[in-house]
Image (cartoon, rainbow, N blue to C red):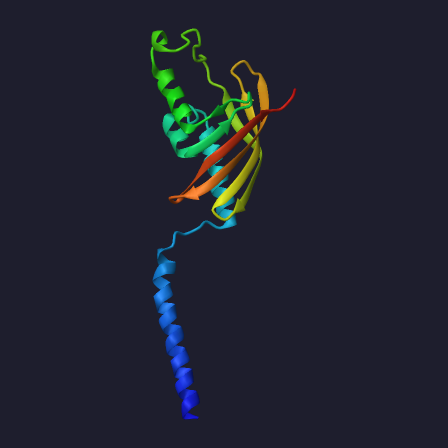
Length: 169
């Protein structure tokens, strides 16, 4: 009987010791968002990014796109985040300094919105698909099907891949 009591006590002490040793590691591990949180966070991020005025700001592109982004436009052009950054710098230059001074920014801005948003969480990665609606100042509306892959790094979601496809009229 004494030996059984000793074995149970030893097992209990061992279990508690392991639990105490492991708990700081668990406490220090980054908190991963739940699937519902992921859906809500990425949907909010997309909608905030598309709000009038935000899409035209460098800081929103810095927040939305990851450093290792591969962006494929609806015209089939592949861009990096560095190239997106450069496009903002070029847009700020006087016309004489631009590589093509004939290209001028539009007087009014196209307004974007998202429909049919689907976020599929996979732990620290999520797939996003949605229909982008672009309303031009002249009233013309164009639709695109977009998809992106987001990674959760440093406590935030950012797009690492992006694909835009223009929907046929």
